[in-house]
Length: 71
Image 1 (cartoon, helix red, strand yellow):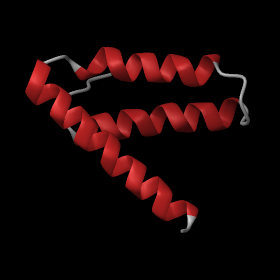
Image 2 (cartoon, one colour):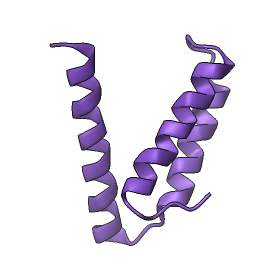
Image 3 (cartoon, rainbow, N blue to C red):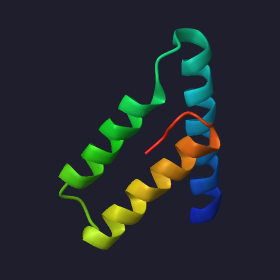
Image 4 (cartoon, helix red, strand yellow):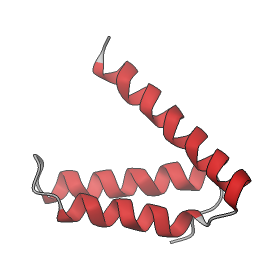
């Protein structure tokens, strides 16, 4: 399986989880996205600042696809 196929599968999984969470709990997406972004920036894993910014921006992109996250 290619890395792109794995990324695509995870993206769809995350979107499905967000939708289910919204339906079941009405919990706003913003705090979840903000916590994920903070985790990215706090991590000492591979990737420098540019990769971390790109990852955080991608989280915002995913959230915007759901129409729930603003800013």
